[in-house]
Length: 83
Image (cartoon, rainbow, N blue to C red; front, side):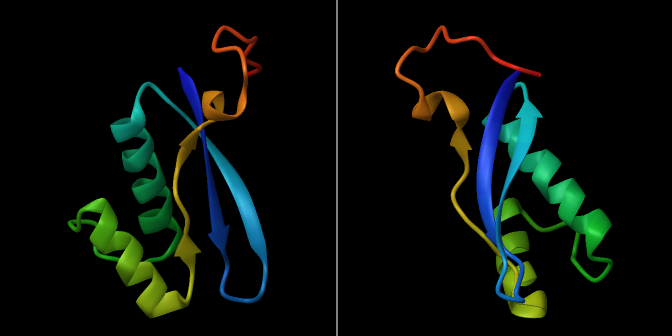
C-alpha cells in the first residue's frame, strides 16, 4: 500500500495535512470521498470526486488541495515505509 498526503483548509483559518493509505490513487480518492460524506451529512455521495470537493467548498468553506504520493518527496523510491 502507498501513503498519500493532501492539504486541506477547514474554513476556520486552520490548514492541515492528512494521510491516506491506499493501493492506488483511485482508491485514495474513494477513501477521501467516503470520509467526507461520512463527516458532512449534506454532501451528495453520488457525485464524482471533483464535484464532491466543489460541493464541500461551496457548502462548508472547506478546501482540499492536491493529493501526493509520499514517494514524490523522497530521493530514494525504495525507502522504508512506516505504517
